[in-house]
Amino acid sequence: MKFILVLTLCSQTYGSCMPPVQNSIYYNSFRDCTMAGYEESLKILKAFSIQEFNEKKLYTSFACSPQGTT
Image (cartoon, rainbow, N blue to C red; front, side):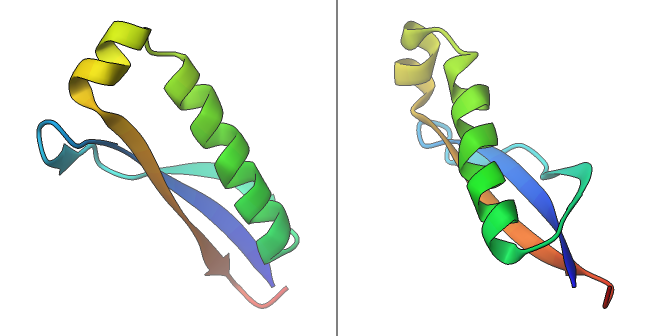
């Protein structure tokens, strides 16, 4: 079974999240997908300035969704 990563960027300040974003990479295992979720989350969060990050209290959420049976 393959897995696809679905990431969501949220703001604790505004109590809302952006629509989830699904990448086009299929991971061979749940572990690979989860590790990529943490790595991609870190990349996304580092792209914001410290001020914006702190003001909006940003965080990410992700899930690894099973895709097919191969």
